Length: 327
Image (cartoon, rainbow, N blue to C red; front, side):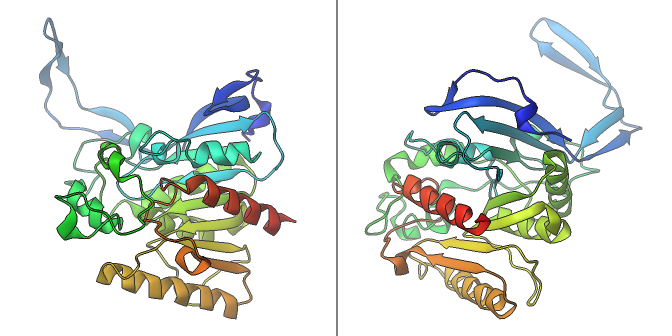
């Protein structure tokens, strides 16, 4: 069993200004595979070093990579696990595109231990390039697609970089958002991602608050339903995944949804499904809240509330909600 309090204290090492008692990382899940029958290839490590590369042998694939952080001022026992959305890695939680502290620092500042996941085939989790194991090729989101899909502005206004009125995303730093995009597979690796996230829960060894964004909501819901004893609360930030009607465990659920939901037919449909999901949970007697931020008087949030100009305020409200469901 792995618990961060077993780590050596690091004496106030700062993360975005938050003193830490310790931090570390680990890999979880995946499987070993053996490659045979591929030809040996001559490659160059450097302009002066040739090497005969043998692609055959034993490899480990489909693992998750996790960084954990323990605040020096720990006020909550409940660990928060942050799961990225599609086309991103755990770095999306570390800082905003315009350089402000991200939700990682916000939740640490609220006194929570935090685990940041790079799930299967993302970031430092790594991935095997052999086509035997991946339904290639992967896709990469363009800046134009992100502009409209993330509800920064209308598709026709991308060239002028003209955002929606009252937009809270830092549009001057939009290119820094795109720098964080990575290739990914649309959904064919979901089963492996669910299994890897379950292995993360097992490695942590206690119930967690799982905070997931966008496509990560689908992975989070499936992993939570597969290991309900590992979940204390589920926070879905503009999730694009929903369980079948009538399928839920007993843990509380919070949905966080931004503004401009009439921007595209996709978002009109997703907004309807957020409400249907909340109503279904209520019928089942599951404690849940659906924060449609614009209806709460918080105008202008994009698909990326952890990066918007009020990101710290939203994180603070989530931290209070988590404290409440544990009381």
